[in-house]
Every structure is written in structure tokens, then in C-alpha cells.
Amino acid sequence: MLQTERFFLKEIQPTDIQLIYKGLSDPQVYQYYGVRFLTLEATKEQMEWYGMLKETGTGIWFGIYDKVDDAFCGAGGYNNLEKEHQKAEIGFWLYPEYWGKGIMSEVMPKLLEYGFAELDLNRIEGFVENDNSKCKKALAKINFRLEGTMRQAEFKNGKWIDVDIYAKLKNQ
Image (cartoon, rainbow, N blue to C red):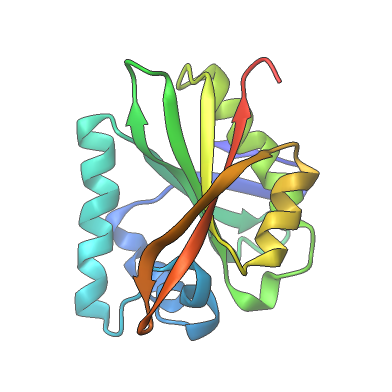
């Protein structure tokens, strides 16, 4: 289990399906996260994905919990882990009631430490929709660098969107 001053992180388990469903069925969350499930049954796909990451060694995701009341706040972790190239993609989402409380600034350094030390990563990447200014500011605060913009990289809600690539290196 990973810990910060106010939060603890534990690996997502199949029994967390209700918690994941609550977040990934919320329009405010999936507006920028890009993954959504409109039923609990459909959320099983996400739970299988978390299991597949662990089984194949291509990632790991954690639930983020408040130490005061054990409340689930959101999730963060790694996927697309490439051992040969020592890189992975980091992802993060929170229930809207936890936005603006400094959680990402507190938890992300612990996730980065885990990625560099435990997963032996050299490069951690983050892909952010171009108009998600809050996420981009948060990544800049923890020293991720903007490396470029993939123009019209995804088709979402009937239009093409640009996606910015951020990265942090182990020796940075």
C-alpha cells in the first residue's frame, strides 16, 4: 500500500466495481477521462482491464482513499507499460467532489516514485486533451514537460480533438 500525508492507495480489486462505476459513469469525470460506463454491468469491462494489466505486467491501478474516513476519492495508475523501453502511461481521475483539494499534487509524486523505483521506468507519459487546462496545470506543477500536440488525434463527441503529450523522465 502506498501512502501520503492525507491519502492511501491500494490496488484496485474486482470488488471495487461500484466505486469505479460511480466515477466512470459521472459526466464530469468522463468529459476528459474518455472512458465511460453507463451501467454497472458495463463497468465489468473496466474491471477486467485492470486485471489484464496486472496479469500481463503492462500496468497497475490504485484506488485513492482518504485516511480520515477511508472514503474512495478516485483512481490513478499505469497502463501501456513497455518494459523494454522502460516507459508507461500514467492516468488519474477523481470524483468531482474531490476536485480542487490538492489531491493530484499530493498523490502523483507517490505514483511517480512507485513508477520510477518499483516499475523501473525511465519515462512516464501523460496524454491530455488539449482543452483540459486544469489537468495540464496540475502536470506542470509536478514537473511534467509538454512535448507536443497530436493534432486531431481523437474523434470525440462528433469532432476531432487535439491531444497534448506530457512526460517526466527519471533523471529530470
